Length: 426
Length: 180
Image (cartoon, rainbow over all chains, first blue to last red; front, side, top):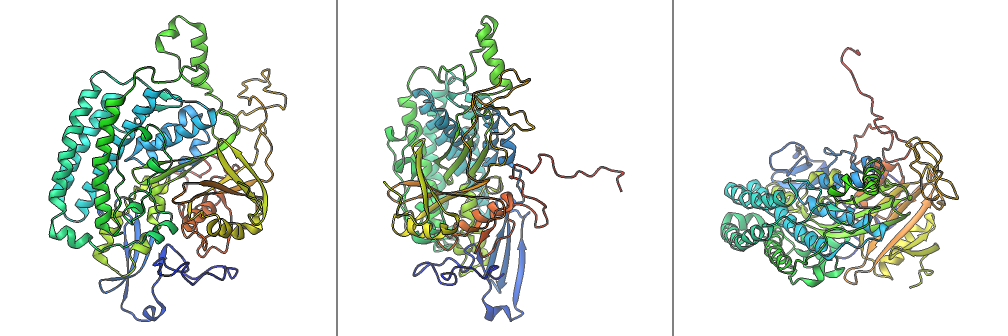
């Protein structure tokens, strides 16, 4: 593939700065060097979209010179479902269910970013209990997402037992979600204005029991992996990404922190109850697959720490704002109050109107900077919704990470980018 | 902060606590370079496109509005409380910039009509590669100077750009058995 336009800026062809490993002229495609292209030893392998170790329907087209990767291109779109178009047809009230299905591993956080965008336009401030519970649920979602990441990564590198251990703990998180919301995944627990329901009695005890074991379980995972010679061999020094390249490629979350950039939106632009809880941001300078693994492990510990503090600091009081133009009236009132019945009917059929404007809200999801661009025309449905999906951006780094790599590294690198294909394709 | 030194500056505004700078479409790349190198916006978070066709007009889905307020007498009215402010052109592209480590955010925005090409910023922020391809694929915006402007999420032979407002929901033809 060559540059399609003759009007390409003059700076194309030269790296944007000294020492950059980002391929040129196309930053996301590693092209076979011309001198190699002539030889007939180059083998092009189509890897995916259905392959047990591609982390979903990711297709990688790889050019191989023996075992060496000399060209690579990630092809996506196999899970494109048109969420953004669909959401334009739904009232805000109903559209909240969509973002959860985009990234099906950290669904609470996707829901959160959309709800925060609606609230920013509405100018609604949720009550403290809702803020703290949102923080708690977001961190449980992060643990859930990281557990699935660790389990599937282990599986792809041949460590099958890790998968069973991770899914054992994942089930505990899903049990907690079920206890709070009634469903295990895609919970739709966050509403514009607060939470859908109060925290059930007994949740704090159950959650504490989980947090107590979690720290020890992370130690057990580390005992399995951190000193395992096969794992170290396959991850250390593999898939290198420098700090400057990571920023230029828009990488965020664990990808950025494992390249030595101390950047976490929970600290840098505090939201929810994060300013009031104590936690550390793990940063590793190596920029390889092993550093990404270490960041994920440390983040699970820190998330458990935040959950613990949320349980301790959980305020009493209402869980949703008392604004009948946005929030459904309590069920019991429908039998006695005509106004409540009208409000209920209007909210369910027509939805609430959101003031005109455009906002861009970002949060630190399990995969990094999750953004939601929301345009409202003042009506009850979003005019335009766009999600900045962290996995989509993470896959842009495939070519850079796989410069000078071997075919076996490709599996480890693709896994370490932590792509959730629903998030990539939307 | 005044953004008037940004090349191609048209206007700036702050709404909902977010700063927006609107620049001329043709000078976008200059503005991007200025913001990256002088103002320190080293991180491109997102490229968000929007189509404003039919903005504030009554449409098939039941939107009705009037300048003075919602016409409650019109049947089945899902009205606006008032008409939204008009937009300068049909399309907008918003570049959401972030500065690491100062955490400043800025929305760099351009407005243009159908068929007008937008300068690519891939050479400024390499991450724009896939974002611009997505904008081309789903919204039909041509990014001039992009090294590989092809469809990314949809099939290569897909017709139309689904996120445009004139692209119908359910517009995909469905084959039934017996229709040979």
